Amino acid sequence: MYNEIVYRLEKGNSLSFNDCDGYEIIGMHSWNLENSGEITKLGFGMASAHCAFIYLRNKNNGIVKPTSKFNIFCEIQAEPKVDNNLIVKFNDENLDNTEFYHAAFTNRPDYVALPYFDLIAFFLCKPNPKMTLFDLSVIPTDIDIEIDKDIDRSYLIPNIVFFKDSMEFIDEYIGYLYPNIIKKTEAQILSQLNKNTPQKL
Image 1: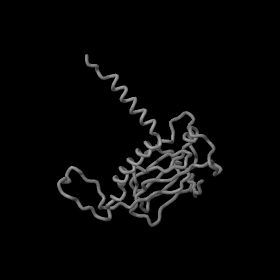
Image 2: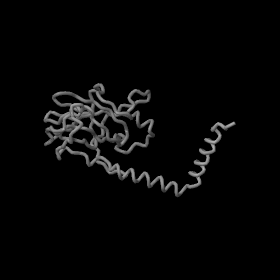
Image 3: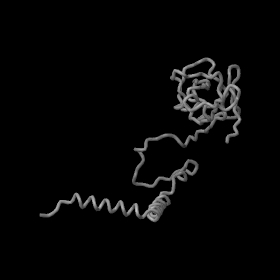
Image 4: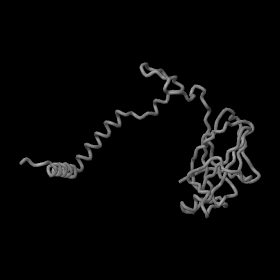
């Protein structure tokens, strides 16, 4: 089902970046295999307690994040900048975690620390200086605002009219398939209303 190249980080080796200055690491894809390189046969509970730790260090800070024996993508919350000093390695110094992954249970009694970290890929993003956070309350609401084409992401918004029409079609289709259920429900509601209506004397 999967065909991934896994890079094993262990004590004594590390990765560095070339030609990526100015980018930030926003996420990573990891898959911690067995020591032999085979895919784990452990169930969810045990696989989530077998954890590996990656260490990213540049001139400004260090980030330690655990993952478990799952084929996963997770965010790097600190979004470190890539520079010539950035080193990626296995956390062989046993530094404390600075970030967490929800399916890496390092506090369980059956927790196992793996002596390696299996990395597939990093996801990088080059920050756009035009896309800075700003206070929405200062935007006037009575005028149209034009958005630069290079930061306009309105095409990601689904076509609401399409979904509205689709829902009407689905309701009609269900009504066609199950008319007896709908009629029965309507009849039950009318019957209940009649029971609860006070009678005139």
